[in-house]
Image 1 (cartoon, rainbow, N blue to C red):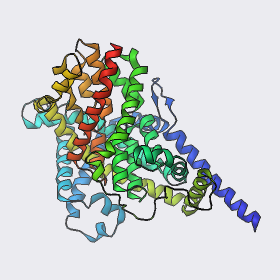
Image 2: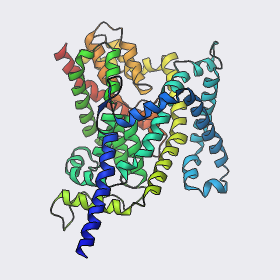
Image 3: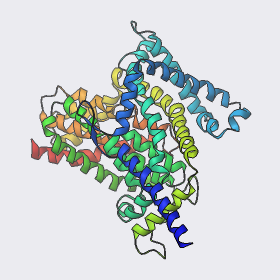
Image 4: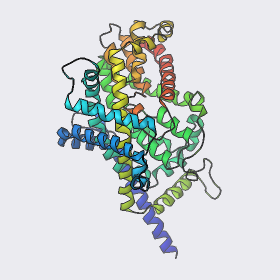
Length: 457
């Protein structure tokens, strides 16, 4: 009997270690791609597939957004075939606001794909312009559509084989007092920082829907632990012509991210989020239960129990397919609709320049040169992360360009990608709350980076 038990435990350990190690290699270990840029293996796989079928991707996005719009309209009538299917119901049964967003997304994507108004003026040309709808369709959606499906299929390697349970037990003593979140959130954080913010948000959404995070914990992790990938920070820094400062630049970005994650949970709106679960009873306790000598033993026991519950390859692919459908039909339309409108406002109205005016006195108080030019970039980062760097690129002040490069990366909740992904998910955050957290991150970033910038320049 003892041999059978030992063998069984040994098999479970193998089922825990092998998929988890593969998942860590795919999502969390930095590697260089063919261009010499640091990224993760999942992103490289997605890029290879995108390169092979790149010409088909815009049409694929059009098809996905059209299906999403048509099916959510059909779902308004609550037909049996949708209501009785967990996947179809989750993908297409949504409230009136989201129906409008998905219909708008389908209209925007068709106008853009067909090139309607590309040589004219007026609202349609604004929607389809290469700086608005064209950018969202051909630069964002064609990237996200592949990374979503590849990441969704492979995410169960991190989620379903005990890695989060083991890491959670080991790191809760650090993560809970510092950031008010479980130890397993460390995996979300590393995935975001090394890979891409969208991967971290996908992971967080999955954990929230599975009952492992409360509404408050999921909101904190999605808004404060999501980060811009190392590769894209290089793009931002190159845009402002300061690649030689990358070392100190990235250290400041990391420092700002940590400080934001410590402070913001105590501020509105995150402090008001309820500590309730979508699925009760799944989260592990924060304290070490009786009968365990240490957190390693407890973490291993949790991991093996998680592996023992897994139903094999069928469950693996079913979980991946569910994740992919949720991202494709729920999130991509949000990115198209919200991202396009946000970019139109940013590029063709003074609204973000006006909204940035309150930052000018703060910037002057902090001794930032070209305070007016810097202030005009502060709010535009809510629409797209690269736009502030583009706007400040011609500024004569090295300090001003450096400050904008840091802040645009640490704001992170831009609607054209991460913000749109959060809004399109089941996370309990609306656009106003995202904007408030965005402002909090912006102010904290300025208070940290400006004094350091004075020392550097």
